[in-house]
Length: 454
Image (cartoon, rainbow, N blue to C red; front, side):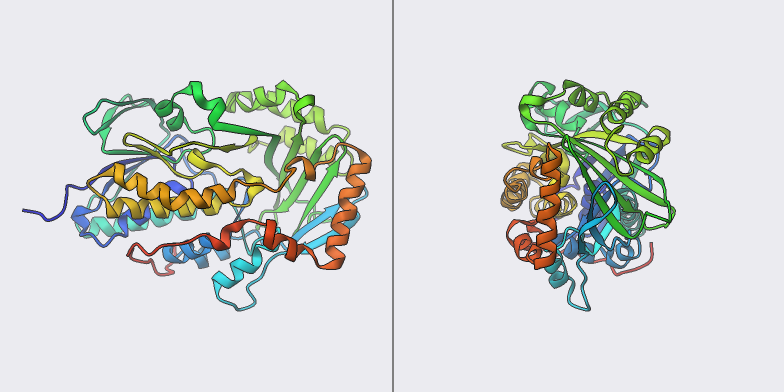
């Protein structure tokens, strides 16, 4: 008779960062291959997109990348961003804060010092990073299959349209496109801020309480690089009316990534901004027209940015928000990453939380393979202090960095100039910057991948 409980049959919804990272660590457990979980990863997109917005990895995230054997691959795929420049309408640079660099130090030390810089040493496009995580999960799956295990079943181009827990210790689901009905021991929602898994398990009626809007709305896309102006630096321009544009390198030298942001006061809201954020992919033209209206007179390079935005096919728009929940599990459904505890891009912690959450959930399931409820409690105990710190934004954010008046914009640039010239930003960032360097990474006994080619 086997000394091990039957392998868990796990469905992971979402194949971006947290989903494949969780799957990889579940397969890196010291259990025999035949006892490792049977994993299905469901991704609604037909294929992973290689681009997307810029993200960074810091602190604990760097440590977890090393355990995955992905540090060299991520370093080779970074955008090469030199740092961030605050510019005005005439493209004059008021302040320039260089990226954090390791200078030959240990990676954890480098990540800690990088917290003092707005630009991490590991800046990468979300799509590229997701592809690296997915490929590593494929390799882990192939290794387990060679040893007699089941590995990972990948299902692309489908989603769930039914999810039910009937008291039989199973989660019953239906795949929308294929119509196939299946039952799993555990379902993991790793499907982002607008998680359908969360909505189906917890109910749509509570989404207004769980998803906390921060009054900021943004559009992400890429456009052709212009050599005369687009450099390795991130250029950040602010316009009156709480508007901002970031132009950033993409690492190929061919494209520039763009983030256009609008911040509204509670007493000066625009319901169209929020409505556009809930319209999904079908509302892209409405979203673009709304941002065109807001940025038509913004100055600087806004004419070019708006023109390219209207023409691009990789546009994405959403509200900047946080997800706050009393519990990240309900029965045998559990959330990881942005689906359960999005801290918002403002926090600088999104990627680190996704990696840390996946790592800790895998460790908890390894310790309690026959009792998912106990595993989820261990996972929440491990992650809750980190999430609470990550979600505590600096006072006044995001409004503080997006002034309403021309005078306010001038003051913001002047303050950045003083911080730049005085060298005080690193000191300030150590107290108010992302807490990624203080996130614990427990030892669960996972096998570590070597830095092999993907």
